[in-house]
Length: 279
Image (cartoon, rainbow, N blue to C red):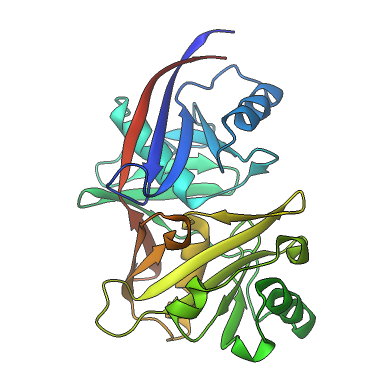
């Protein structure tokens, strides 16, 4: 074991403790997978990342992303938080206009959006409408009638999200899902706020972890998939702000903008803890 640089950040917020927490081991080189998994279980955060030297040409660094029970090929708030931590620790990108992160899903471009960082939404690995048996399961898990689902789509860019749209943001916030009924589904729910509101949409994300309902505070991967779906279908404008986390006492903000063929997902992040960890 040795001492390694460590940071804990709050992502998709400029105010500490109102976003989604992330643990980052800044020099993970030499750690085997078992050690990474053990530390991720110990932090017990939704994700813990380990930064490593890149293996692909053009990448500035490589990241491995772990939940307490598995490794993820890609996730949004770990992408922005890891990049923030890497830059704050003195990381110097090869290009002046973007940082290139290597992860299991491939190379992800990250650029500065004013004070924020933004990642280009990765391609969806599964898309298209959900079938009726899946929608029946989603409705039962959410405790709603199937007729309350106005739109639906697979928006899977790695984690496996299926998304449904309800009539209003208020209906989204009122949901009280049953985790046991989710099974292996990872469900994103979105609903529009009234015209003129600070945010265009309210988002919630639910998974079943060992039979228990887990709600993610702010979810970059889900918001990326939602944006690709909703903007592509003409349901959402080319740029908007989504709120997430209110049901958990958080105030996450996800900034979405289409630029040519790319959709960029941006958010603030702030370092809450810095130091060294023995691993």
